[in-house]
Amino acid sequence: MTSRNICVVGFALFLFGFLWAISDILLPFIVGLVLAYLLDPVADVLASAGCPRWLGASILAFGAIFLALGILVFFAPILLQQLIGFIEQAPNYIEKIRIGVGSVIGNLQDTWPIFDQALSAEKIREAYGPQTLAWLGDLTRTFWVGGLAALNFLSLVIVTPIVLFYLLRDWDRMVAFLVDLIPKQHSKILRDLFGSIDQVLASFIRGQLMVCLILVFYYSAALIFLGLDFALVAGIIAGLISFVPYIGMLIGLIVSLILAFLQFGSWDPLLVVVAIFLIGQMIEGNFITPKLVGDRIGLHPVWMIFSLMVGGALFGFSGVLIALPVAAVFGVLIRFATEGYRKKYLKDS
Image (cartoon, rainbow, N blue to C red):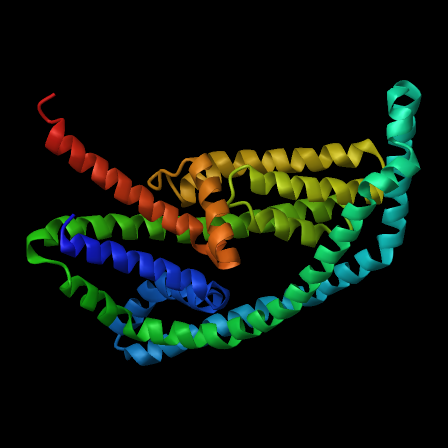
């Protein structure tokens, strides 16, 4: 390995370690970067129409702020109302769960005598009492982290628009600076590579965002039509995490089934919920995603799930946000390297 390659590897490791160390404050910068990437074509259109770049960046940054505030003002009262309703109904739900679990345990004890002692109240208390206390402790810590997350949300609201403005204003200059760093002898190859990466990222980010928004509307409308009390919450959860193949749909389905069971207590609404999610999965997989995202990304579902888990483990929520775009970039690099290998070593075979 040459000294230049050693320097490159060392810098990459240093950069990774640095990002890992500051992962708790990355969220507003990542969101600003993603928004700047999405809005740069709009800024280019405004610039070509004679609008100064700084003015176009200001218009887009303020537009993004007002759009986010408008969505928040519209949905926040509804979500708050549903949250209050859920808290008010929580005792009834807990009682239903207690009765249901007691019925299941009673049936097991009557059918299988071996469970009679294993599922006794004393045995369960001795076996799961310490775990319950530990779980309550973890829940308390989660609420504490949630309080800190409120500060992160505040920094997201304040810092992200500033980051978005400066990135939009200087985007073309930053791209030109990076292009100037490309060695002349590799200019053609690297330009083609970066063009492929840009195409994949644009297709994935813009397309997947539209897919999530469409599914949020579909699941929310369908569950509201069913009469589910907390349909908007369930629909937003199901739609926003639908970028995770199959798992996103399953999580939304489980949440909706639990809410439907606690509210209705009969099988018919549960079957309707299952039908809603099966239809949504079929429409998303066969029509929406192929149309909006396309097959140019080439990410296998297992690779996507693995990338999300790795991103979350390393960088938390920020890692989840960037996991799939980074995985898409790695996919392009792997295909590029594979194609180069085939041309160089397998052309005569």
